[in-house]
Length: 223
Picture 1 (tube, one colour):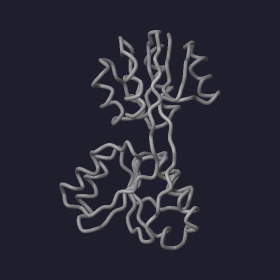
Picture 2 (picture 1 turned 60 degrees about the vertical axis):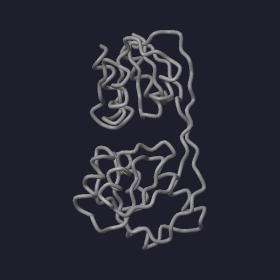
Picture 3 (picture 1 turned 90 degrees about the vertical axis):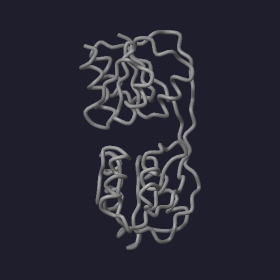
Picture 4 (picture 1 turned 180 degrees about the vertical axis):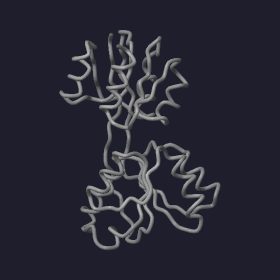
């Protein structure tokens, strides 16, 4: 069984696949560059839908000579995914709501925070669900692009039994140069899976949003 990962794996992660008797090729289908973004001095409600959004936010806080003062520590943070939540909390930020995906988070905001203002820290390739839902509900929000996603398309001649996808952008990068054949798409979450279903007949979703969970789902699916 031949596996392609659209994200470079750590040695221990590769070993999990190799130990299951799978051959592995990995590469980075996308690259991330943090942008120099001005963090507003007053943010009462912050939205993060990725770890990269958090990392860039923290980097820009330091660049602006702003520390995690009482105001920043006191803001309400809403996020998507357990890994994003963990990263926020490790840096002293309080998460008041964690959702499985951006659409679910947007619907929560519409239902529970109709009259509040939000700041959304996101990437250049962010999906439209959350902004569109908030706009339609006339929720007041500001959007700050904190990182840029660049596609790194690469053509592969060989056929794969399984392809690991970790974001819609990674999927977009892969299909721009390759046919999908009969490969199974193993996706990190429902948002990536929804994008994969446009190209792949067979799509499975990891049990949680971690690389290890994607690997576990790959082994279970293909062995």
